[in-house]
Image (cartoon, rainbow, N blue to C red; front, top):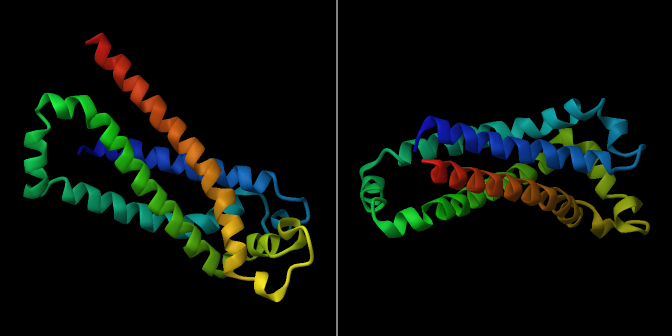
Length: 176
């Protein structure tokens, strides 16, 4: 596992994070989160407070674990034909799982900090519930809507990035 690979992975996760944040904020009503945040950068800084430490920790752990002897055995097996055939797909599945976990924990962390007041007020309002929200609709029941509104565009953007990476890698391998 090289630093270059980790950088590409972090870039892909970052692009999916920013893209899904922009999509969420751009489809919100004008008097919703835009009332609380002074534009997109102000909104995204609150998410970065939760996202950046988590991504750094996961990247560091991934880098350290790829250097251990246990993973050295896995690298020796990678020389087989079977590994060359399925290796890029397994890397993509692992990258998606790690990215999904980072996005989930970031969303939970962001929902709990005071900086998410604008987003919480949007998802605890009639805009999301299409009715006057009951007391039981506040808090975590509203989080479900926020999480789905974030994770669906995130997954689409992330998978598009992985498909581009796989096709680019196959094209480069074919040129050799």
